[in-house]
Length: 437
Ligand code: SAM
Image (tube, rainbow, N blue to C red; front, side, top):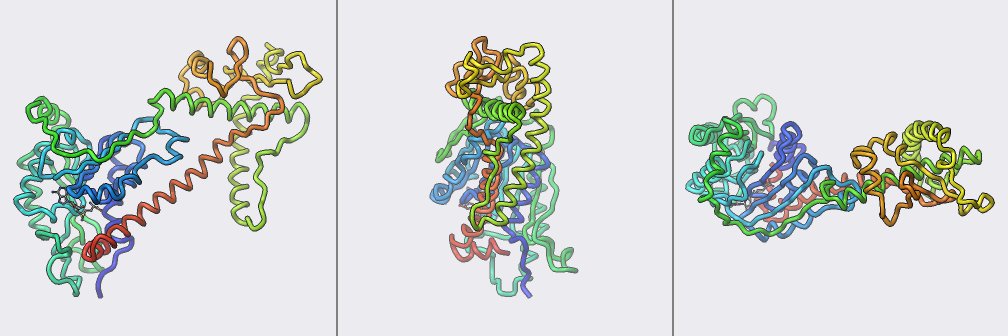
């Protein structure tokens, strides 16, 4: 019986890379022979990566799906701490391009078997001798596994120029290491049926290369400006929103400040009036059933977290009130007209009690500077407190938005997988076969 793989083999190959990324946290990653960007679409969720590049000789394939690499709304609502630049190139791995030097990780997943042996030599020279990434992951079919597929005649794909045994792969890999100063470990994905693993090995064999000598090799090579060639064509370039961008930082900080100030206002009003303001509590719509309960549970959890944070801050507010009673609850001289009254939330309370506010602003004076003149924030005359209308109903439900976005993110990750399988099913039948074994 023909072996089947669960999850499918192409997913296992990508998961291998993702596990490596989780363990090693590379900042600059390039996927060589990236095809329709399915691995890149998963890698972009790894927030340690600051530069993510894809290269393929087939520009049309890249163009088909590259727009799926664009930031989603969640990337704007919850921007990354560090920047992420995604770039896609049309180009051949047999040619040098200076923009691909100095990466922490280069991946070559089911690529080399599509090259002639002469081009594999060029690939070795370009990738290991010129790009010199700190780590390289190379996967390629293991031909010793092929007899387990009784219907297979010849190679696994019509475009394959060769398929190597484990010994052939090892011999190439060890030569690369010797020529270019790397060490390699051999492994793979797609296990053989019980009792046959040792005899036939993995269905996809993988070499994980690490450059010897750390940064020195790289720096020496980079001194040679004469080698600065730019042979690839840039197809796509996208900068993700990050807190490095001052406008983004300010927007996120304002959202955070208004959210917590509003929570404090609400609790303050509740304590003042002895009434609970449940405006934010989700209510079940007809037929919502389970979803409503899940949402309510999440909401409850959030409420508890908020209550804990606000509880601590309220204590501080009360202490603050002892010192500056007039500051905390400001009436604008219109005590009878509740609508004109304001709750004043000192910046010092927001800064000292809410860690994200402190982390984003860095210092109390910086917090004041960043909020000053922002159209959505009303500060007291001396700039020491945020003023909110006593009866304000605005709900800054950041956390709820975030959770919804998290779900979107999950969906998109899944759709990445879906695309990966669709992609290999649609390109041509053999690719389909290649992806599924
Ligand atoms: N790496 C992809 C993945 O894991 O889903 C799929 C790889 S697909 C089997 C092989 C890819 O290599 C194709 O997209 C093909 O266009 C690309 N390719 C072939 N020769 C190339 C070359 N000389 N330089 C760059 N890419 C090349």
